[in-house]
Image 1 (cartoon, one colour):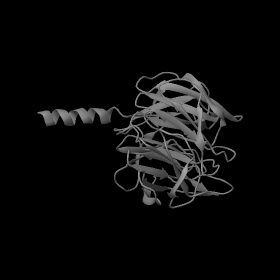
Image 2 (cartoon, one colour):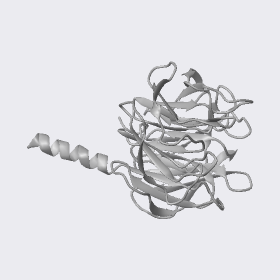
Image 3 (tube, one colour):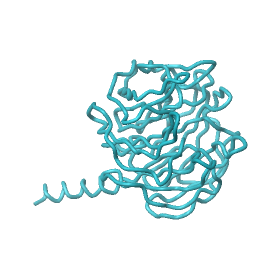
Image 4 (cartoon, one colour):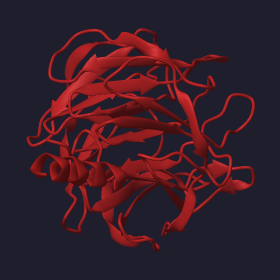
Length: 304
């Protein structure tokens, strides 16, 4: 009986894992829509609420609170950070500001801290906030080099930044220790240099998916073991080769949403992070969009 109760308890936690996708650029410009899915199921996204500012943005989250920081608002970069309570649908509220206007940047988080790094044009800045409070971001340190259109992912202790552009596409993976401050350190290389890719993670494994080089769109999914250093290994393929998608996860399942090649997509893909293999269709966002901010209440930066 105890065993059955225990299994039921953990199943209920898995079922409660929720992913949010916010903003992005649709057919008529940047949008403020936030939608959500339950990660353990499959199906189309449901309306959650609205951002305070319509924009292409980047998400960071704890198990209770989701933050969306910076992004492109249709005319330039923004420093806006807004937040929602992930379990409760509703509109976002102002949290504070990043240290500067950021677009084409990325994000990652632990259960305690949200981190944003890089950006247009070839910024090496890294910002952080304490998710449970409100207020302006603080300087964390610098990337190995100034990169834009890179991607972030994390374990509870370590944050990784992968790919991007800096005068040309890069295959670089770099890392930070999230609870400290300081400059990023080289980790290894992706299997393919590319930019405008997406990331997600369990507490042990980080995935990097999609991206582009010139006009070649990739369906590649790479993975690394976050606690080590070294080069990425092939995981499998997305259902559609594309760039400007975004990823998030539970500790078990990774999701990749939106993106574009010659057309914008509303597709959501999923993979089982602990295995390898090709992605499977999960469902659809409520609109075809590029670079929606993505976060969850159960990603690898949260799970112990």
